[in-house]
Structures are given as structure tokens and as C-alpha cells.
Image 1 (cartoon, rainbow, N blue to C red):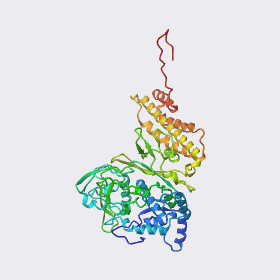
Image 2 (cartoon, rainbow, N blue to C red):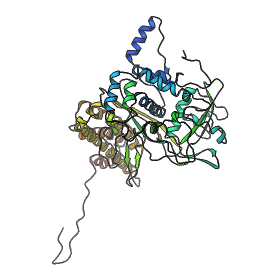
Image 3 (cartoon, rainbow, N blue to C red):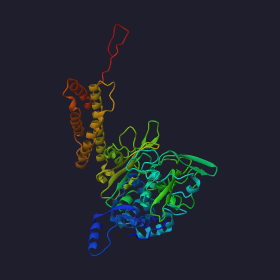
Image 4 (tube, rainbow, N blue to C red):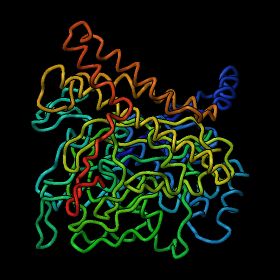
Length: 529
């Protein structure tokens, strides 16, 4: 049952558009109430109900990973505002602990803040549509269409992905679905050509990639959504002024798209105002579905510096910072040491997300969820990425740094075995087929598919049991077994048996490299140096 009748504006505070998973205690209490004629728990909630009942909700049930990452950022900003953790100070940790002690977000503060900006949370508001630019209707030559808006649909001449749709007869998505894909565009949108937009004398049709384009976003999660939201609020820098650090729904006027963007002035604006894309949704009559969408550039210039508290930042050989990219074929366990340690091993000098420096305080259990979108830098979308670790709060704490370093070494040993297995299978295939060089092949692909899931199981078992002795042998044993399985079919021929045995040495690091000794000349003859 809707809390308020649907209207043209689609009020995101009241409309139930965010799918949630209720906590076990809440479900039990609701079950008892239902037997007495009470109301059943809804499968989705609006923003107001979500914040007021975050302590009763176990987690968000958003099934589009990049949309989940975008929604988390909006919720972190709202949480920081209603708890007043958007203000720096030496007592910041104490203030957050006080909120944790309360066990819920203060409903009066939630009501006070949301009422102040109530008109800004209408998805189709005529003046301030939520996270959109109403000027696009006049400044863009044409709309992009709903197939372009919904990132899981094919549009134009692109291949079908999850479903078949036609631009000539698009199916209008529900407003609840459209707002999630609005978030995907704001954070993960592509670079390159877009709808032409004219602002004054400036006409352009190119856009910079979204701030999270191709990146993997890491989020601490607690036992309830309340704990998750507090864990995701990073401590602001001492120079942050909340009155200048504004979210888009708090702006007094829309920014000039032509001028250099100056909208990020702290954590709340950093979470919500970094979008390089401007969008405007066009509703069907009744405001429950979307019939069209404008998608164009938000700013002519790229927003700098690129920063985010939920990414693992690495450094290239040229000294440039870049986030760890989303890779659907890479297990989350291979990133764990970069989440646990301030200075993890690796040539790229990874730095853990800033939020983890304070996320572990006062929590009994804490998981890490990684969500992202495997993409190229421009317009190619490949696959959603989502994974979650077991509880890591003990390893994340400062006093357990030695164990965290052991986890880092464990990861290195697992990856080393995997890389050596890849080399061995490629070499065996090249020898067997008389190829000119060892490259990616059927054997190496099958070996990777077999090895990495088993290596992940071995990794988490050893972490859980704090068993770090003999890890190299354990991972190598898995690699040996996989190598036998993958190359077994060739063992029945002399050529195949010779190839697999000659390449097997790569499982152990390859043959030692020989060093040629040069003879010294002069004097009475040569002498080896």
C-alpha cells in the first residue's frame, strides 16, 4: 500500500522504490503482528522510511551493482547530514560512537532535514528534478530515448545484452527502475559523443567519462543498514565547511555548464556532485513510468581532481593515480590486503580506500562489498561485478596489522601459483601445437577457470583459521592438480607427453637462467671473472 497517492512528481521520499532485505528480528516481529492483522513489511521503501528504519533493515536489495554503488553514495551523504558527521572536529569519532549507541538514526533529525528539501526529491519535479538538469529540454536538440537510459538494454545498433528491445517501440520503464539507471549514468557513464547541447553561444556533443567509470567500488557493510551507512561516512578533512559542501539537491542555483566546475568542496558534494553527465527524465502521464530521457554533458571541462573515498588508488609508472578497475574474472580475495593495509605490497603502490581508516571503529562485525562495472574508458560495457568478503573487522583493526600482513603474503603466494600455472599451460600448448610463441589458449583459459575458484577457497580457509604456514605449497598443489587435469588429454601421445613434462617446470618458477661468463683478456691468458 502506498503511503501517499502517486503523483506526477514521483516523490522519492515517500514512493517505495528502493528494494530492501529486512533484518531477521524485524521479520519475526512482523510475522507476529501479521497474525493479529498487522501490516506486512513492504519489499521496497522510500528514502524517508529507509532512513527512519535503517536499523530494522539488513541490507539493500538493489540488483544492479553500479546502481547500488551510486545509491550508497547518496545515502552516505544523507546520513552525514542527519547525524551531523559532515562537520570535522577532534570529537568526530566520539560523535559517531554516540550515534551508534543510539542504535538508529534520529527520526526528528531525518524529518527536519528531508522536510527542508522536500521539493528537491521529486523525480519529475518541474524546477528541481532529483539529480537532473531541467534545462536539457530546451538546450538539447533531441532526446536519447529510454533504451539508452536503461543500461541493461541495447540501443541503436548495439547487440542485445539482457533483453531484446527496439528503439522504434521502446518499453517504458517504471520510475523505480529509471532512477537506478539515472544513478548508473551519473557515476559510470561513458565518454565520447552524446546528445548535442547548446548553452549560450557554446554548442558541444562530447562528454567526459563518469567519475567511477570502469572502477571497482569497495563498501564496508555491517549487520544492519544503519551500521552500513555509518561505516560508509568518512571523516571530513579539517578544512571542510558544511555550508559550502553542498549536494545537488541543496544548491540554490544550477551551475554554469560552460565554466570550470567548482561544485566539489568536501565529502558530501564529492559523493553526489561529481557527475560529468546531465540527464533529464520525461515521465508518462501519471508519473509512474518514463517515456523518454535527455542525456548530455554536464560540464565542458573535466572535474579535477578525480578522487573518491571508496576506491583503491594505484600509481602508474609515470606517477599518475588511477583506481583499481573492475574485472569480472578477478576474485575479490586478491584485493583484500589492499583493503587491510595502509601500505600493501605491489608495484602499483596501492592505497586502501580512505573510508576504511575509520570504518572499523566500534563495530563487532564488518564485511566488505565490492561492486562495479567492467567497462572500457569510453562506451563499451562488458559485465557487472559484485562480491562480498567474510567478516574482516578483526583484520582491519590497527592492533592486528601483523595478521593483515600475513594475509597480504598469502595473497601474493596464491597469485604467484596462478601466474605460474598460466605460464605452464601456455607453454605446454605452444610445444604441443608447435606454435611460434606461448599465448593465451584453451588450456590456459580452462586452467584459470579451475584454479582461481579453488585458490579463493584455500585463501579464505587459511584466513579464517589463521593458517599461514605452508601456504606456497598449498597453492602450488592446487596448480599441480589443475595442470594435470587440463593437459591430461595430450598425455596419450609422445608429443603431448613431452610437451606437458617440459612445460611442467614453469609451475615451480621455470628453469634457472644461465649466466654467461666472459673471459678476461690481457696479461698471460684468460681468467674467468
